Length: 80
Image (cartoon, rainbow, N blue to C red; front, side, top):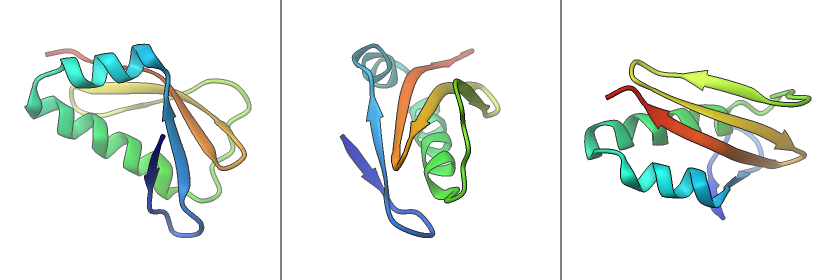
């Protein structure tokens, strides 16, 4: 589990194994973009996600859901 700072209490970020594998399989140049997307989601203290949500960058995306103070990252990827 990865803890990231947020405006309020830290959100816990949990990557399912497939998302973690994908995160470390992408090139370094896009790896930073995916981490930035995770940080952006974790920094929003009032995030309200009932089921699945997605966030997109220039080349990358992640699919996630929120359970209380835990962001569960289900999928990450990039178009490069």
